[in-house]
Amino acid sequence: MEKWNQTSNDFILLGLFPQNQTGLLLLLLIISIFSVALLGNSAMVHLIRVDPRLHTPMYFLLSQLSLMDLMHISTTVPKMAFNFFSGKKNITFLGCGVQSFFFLTMACSEGLLLASMAYDRFVAICHPLHYPIRMSKMMCLKMIIGSWTLGSINALTHTIYALHIPFCHSRSINHFLCDIPAMIPLACMDTWVYEYMVFMSTFLFLLFPFLGITASYGRVLFAVFHMHSKEGRKKALTTCSTHLTVVSFFYAPFVYTYLRPRSLRTPTEDKILAVFYTILTPMLNPIIYSLRNKEVLGAMTRVFGTFCSTKH
Image (spheres, rainbow, N blue to C red):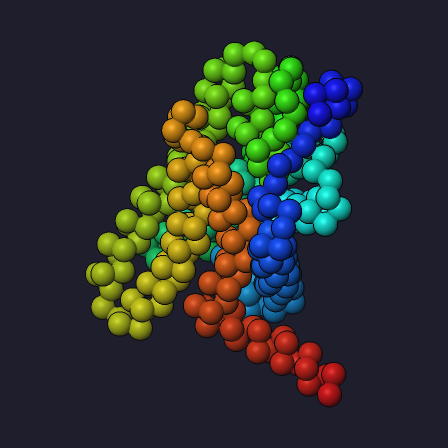
């Protein structure tokens, strides 16, 4: 193994499951979750694209969230499944860089997009008369482009830095994806500067937006409880609780993983937490938004009901 490490630039992904029957069953479960996530997020993007009633800023932002979730889960599960079934655990140097870039882009962009969605609900509920101006199509487009652009720049910076680190120990990454913090222990140089970069990025792209979301919903809840209309209060609470559920699933494991010192983290714990934000969250988001949103359920009936009628 040492000879192989010295003559190859490939990395080895140790994976999530053992190569036995239990591992196979768990992987099949992950593949099932992957299929549900692909179907759910693709359906959400299609619904918002074809149904005119969903052509509002909130749903345009939601369609981008579904697109990010599609790309997020597609970055990890196919490679994980291929390595398990082929019996190979290697990933090329370039492949590792590409996977790391897309993983980080989706993670950072999604954090910023969730903050944009919180701002959208804040304006809609607290300043309804100003909503058409504050959340115009141009503002919505700027939010979307800003989320993708900032996420990509941050991911590119981290990826380029990580791939220039000299790896003089084993190239075995104790993870199921090329997560840069999992690669750092393999470096033969002091990485305190990079660990500081990770902390700052986590603050800027996860903790700071989370604080913005918390502040927005604090104002929203204050406004909701002062509403005179019970129907309006119920609708606002349903919308906000749906978004807060998605935010909690996304932010909690990310912040817990990346804001802790490396000495307090274990590879096994990091992998389990990574399953939440890379695999489970992309599957749950479209389910949460569709089951708790009458407008989405109505769009499903109109679009897919029409499709079924046409088939018959």
